[in-house]
Image (tube, rainbow, N blue to C red):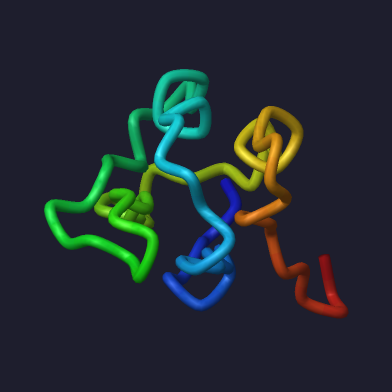
Length: 76
């Protein structure tokens, strides 16, 4: 099992356009759209269940804005 911390998933709020693809395609339902707005009035995602995240990278694969990515530890 891969242990994930919130800092392992990087979300660039200002790049996000709130499409929700990362949330929709997360197989572990670890993400949800925030209720807060970025400066462009979009709802960026938030990692709400870091323990469920397996770092599968589907979020970064489906993000059309490259606003989310997985930061790998050197040991991974």
